[in-house]
Length: 82
Image (cartoon, rainbow, N blue to C red; front, side, top):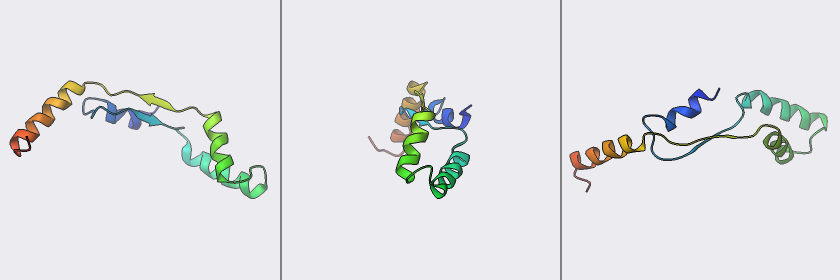
């Protein structure tokens, strides 16, 4: 689950999509470095491409943007940013 990645697209959304990579990105990065050291992967560019092809990104769309827009309009009026 990408719960942390979904958070910005929830009730406090600012209207931007969020792309989330593999949940185990840290472990995959460590494996990639070991594969480079062992000669199975040429460099970080090749390693990143391998990970990109193996683990697709999850894309989350913003929700409840009307609520966020209303809160922003209120913020602007309070601070006279109109």
